[in-house]
Length: 435
Ligand SMILES: Cc1ncc(COP(=O)(O)O)c(C=O)c1O
Image (tube, rainbow, N blue to C red; front, side):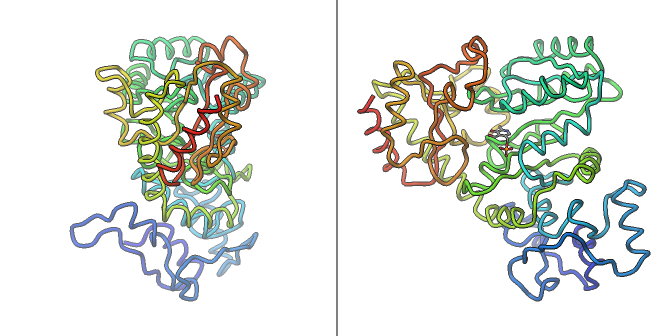
């Protein structure tokens, strides 16, 4: 069966699409295989093996009736979105192939690509939240997301209530009850694992709480899956409705682009698409093309980075200059976090918190002595990065909140890349000598 996108491409190119297979015999093809061809038919682009980059602001309609039909889809007069290509603020071939492939990883109905992780989150919030509503969210959230919800939406009469990332069912129930007192709860927003505490959110418990608290019209549950997705966590399978990504991180994976994505329930994605069409937060064709290239090696890169992180953390955990490390591979047997991990995750990721003995002086000495790892914020790239959240990404967070979240001056945040693991261990060992 041709996909919707291929039918759409067909109607604008007037040639029969030849869909890449999603199944051979009884075998459903894996995401890794689909990243190499799914959603693109070379015949529609002069036989080009790789999709060309479609640098155009607008698309020519075959006839006026086709133009009308496409606009009926894009304006919501007819369900299902645009049937064909119209104008590059709405859609484009590179973005559509990217969206098809993003959806594959979480077995999602549909997906959307955005110009950044924050533009994805902003478009999501603008779609579902209006004055008088309350957003219930896990905490902490990525600093810009917290600012957007608390400060910016706050200016438009939106309230918020949060619960700690590791919360159990009772605490989540209580947060939803407090949220209902403040207004219509129109969105439940999660981020797991929380940055920089690495606490996992129990998405299954949140689903159960939402279902119990809202027997009729349920607020969507959206989750920022940037840190573990799409390889090590697939929250749609745990009951989330929408999974949100900063594609800048692991999916882009080379620290050379900024983009965002949302995958999930078709009807909800359609509503977000309407907002994206209006405000123009779609990613550009060049970035979409780079993401397609990145997706081809996503599994390889993430797997290697995950293996490296395990080896590096194993070295660091017993080092005399290390106070402790927050790494999902070392959760205490029998703990609640270990239980959430077992139900929600297939890998511990490659981003972790390293607490050195001492304070800012020791953290800075360590960072300044690194030779392979780069001193930079961000994560999920091929190269190892390290930074000091208290002095950098979380500098603006009030001191008492920082303390509560464990963002202490001796904390170094590390994102492990795809270098040789023993070289990384040598670099870390050498930098610890300087502390
Ligand atoms: C968890 C998380 N969500 C969202 C974002 C925002 O993404 P972007 O920088 O692509 O806008 C980031 C960026 O660091 C992040 O770490």
